[in-house]
Amino acid sequence: MIIDIHTHIFDAAQHFGPKLNADLVRCGVDPAVWGNVEERHLETTKAADVAVVFGLQASATGWNIPNEAVAAHVAKAPERLLFFASIDPLQSDYMEELEKCHRQFGAVGVKLAPLYQNAHPQDKRYYDIYRYCQANGLPILFHAGTSFVSGTPLDYSRPVHFDAVAVDFPGLRMVLAHLGHPWEGETIAVIRRHAHVYADISALYYRPWQFYNSMRLLVEYKAQHKVLFGSDFPFTTTGDSIKNVRALNSITGSSGLPEVPAEVIEEIIHRDALSLLNLPNPLQK
Ligand SMILES: [Zn+2]
Image (cartoon, rainbow, N blue to C red; front, top):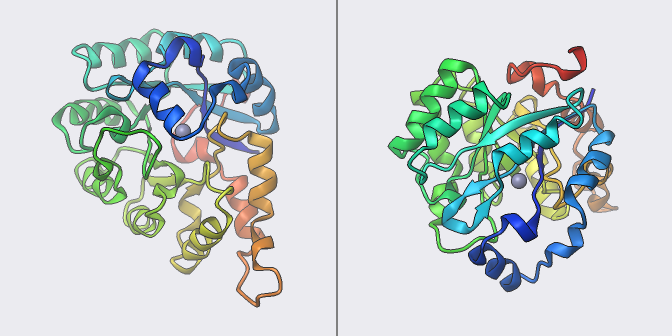
């Protein structure tokens, strides 16, 4: 079974604010290249058995993808999609939104992004969210590591801050996205310390040298069993991610550098994230 733990949907024309659009222009990204994200999402995620889907609520950096829209999208393929709610701690009703998504819209997890949401991972508003998630068995997937967005402190994305959260919430299931790039070593140090803290490998394969190094580090620290497969659609697709993660050793060429064992790569691609995160299996509904 393959679980894509990290996919986005949005409609850039409707859901992106001026600040985000300016960041995209500055970084030379044209949202038109993603086409109809919702339609493509339903197609590409068929390369996995199950996909976790979220939008993003981050007023500080111009993201406003309504949770209702994501829940409605998941309802188009409930036999293989799972909805994670994105909660913006800068909104006064953030706890009501969390409860509504959980109780009414069927959210089975939460997506947070401190760098995008302009709040430190140890902010007391996040702590309200962590408390609720721990009490209700909802895992949290955090954006960790760098991003193209501007105007917020990069420090909020440092993997080490999630270490302190895990100490305070030992029962909370957490996923640090993108191996916390470019602090993959720091992420590995965090995930191997805590039983319920994981990382995903989404959006990394297209930096092949860094990805290869990160995977070697994982093997050296024997932390590969804490790593989940994810794509970060639409920034790449589920199918392309599977294909290119499998090809990661091609960078070694005839250099004599050590390979990442093929079984480590396959175990990550086939990791049962549903069991590890206590998520319902929609295939068994
Ligand atoms: Zn993402």
